[in-house]
Amino acid sequence: MKIKEHDYTSEKQYCNDVQELQDKYPDIHKAYERISKEQFHLFARKMLDYGKGNISVGTNLDTPEEEKVALTGLWFRMNDKIQRLKQLVLLNEDPKVKTESVKDTFQDLSIYGIIAQIVKNKMWK
Image (cartoon, rainbow, N blue to C red; front, top):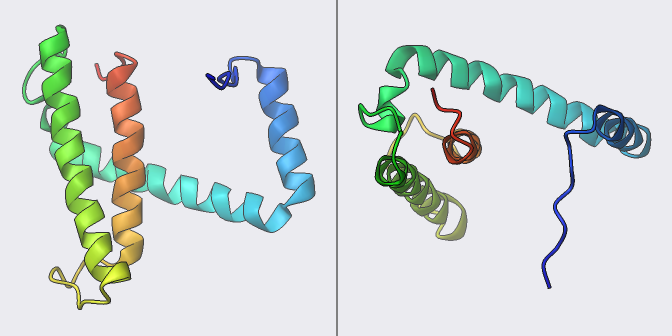
């Protein structure tokens, strides 16, 4: 059974959902919005540092093969972050990279997930 994807192209529905979330769960709404903005700023800073070629591996992502290479690279990056979370959260090990906390790792995973969606939607141009 396939779950129907929500159509967020409808601005009215989007506004209704956001308003309902804000009314029902104001603290969660506020926290999500704050974290989203923080992550967007982090993404922008990193994007300006590395450029789009870091994800597209120097291609324009014009072919399915180029897209697959980019998505595979993102998978590897995300897997590295999952392994770090395993060490930090599940195994309670000291971080091997002292400058990357659990929060940093979750941020990276979230941003890579969004980048993967942009690549998959053929918008990494």
